[in-house]
Image 1 (cartoon, one colour):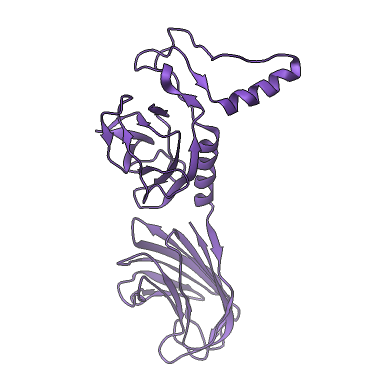
Image 2 (spheres, rainbow, N blue to C red):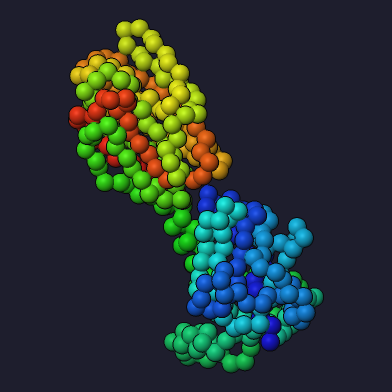
Length: 319
């Protein structure tokens, strides 16, 4: 028997907007549906197989650009949904439908039967007031094309997975600033925003320290933007080899943070402010850089032969 897959269930992006160009995989219950797909159909008779992954438009499964129903022949199945960038939106290894679609036709819904487990639960509740449910739930004969229900566990799974993805974050362990560079690697692929923080940072020279980012290797050229040093006067310098933290004397202690945000696939826009403990001035920096692949690493560089001789560094990663 062909079981009705919920018509017009809406999937959302990680920011809550309707999912466009998403990929929906339906597979064997208990297994990864992306690698263990089952046959799904566009029609209740099971004569029109639908190729997987199924695509989405405006948050719903679509066929040739229009919302579409999907049917399966299994009583339970697994589900996975990814966005157009391949990020996980929803995942459930075992979904069991509580609806028997034998009484549902394309034009008229005549009868909907509940599975035995759900009938038992309902009877348990009714018996508290002296009642018992028997038979099927019958809908009026004029109820047409109006049944849109999501199994409870599927709805909870979708909501939980989406919330988990939206709330992904990680705070790295604090590192002591010593040597020529301090590196933070293994930045997760889901990172969309990173904040680099530093306190009491100083070097043994007068070079302007920089922050560099990279994919499989650190990007050492191609940075665009500028830094403005606000002291008794105003001095501005252009970015080139990295995001400048702020220049001052060798005895300066720098405190501040930089926020680096993904725009598009691999373009990263940064802005930050640095204060100096030995002067009334501050440094303000803004710019961007394009990577070839996903962001994977961040480096603090004292520059040239200068070395860090004090300070603490950490990175907050948000997805």
